[in-house]
Image (cartoon, rainbow, N blue to C red; front, side, top):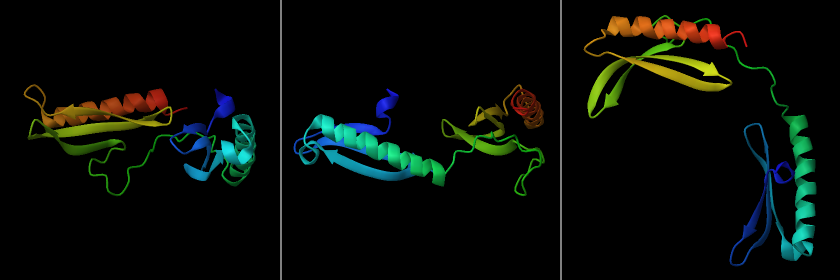
Length: 147
């Protein structure tokens, strides 16, 4: 229902109208309620709400154009990286009240952050967990890094 994107109907005890939100720069840039009473009925209020949304969205798109380029995976570790490998960090995960030493591989998949944990267990030493996390991160670099 893209025609009404950013427009919601409000029907409460004393308020009836269309509420418009215009988004840009990862936040709400404009918001306004178009009351049925003020604009002469439900349909007229909706027409004005759509007109307001379209105008303000056009202004928002000019002010804050969307970045079309996808972020690539980092190649150099940041200064606070203790593992020496980009996208791999150490943490102590809590599970049932215990703290478990864990290496975590992180990457970005279709613009969304993802992670996979490698715990130290009876069958896996902490060094093996680190090696598996590094190998998994490299696999994800191959899969998602060139996009």
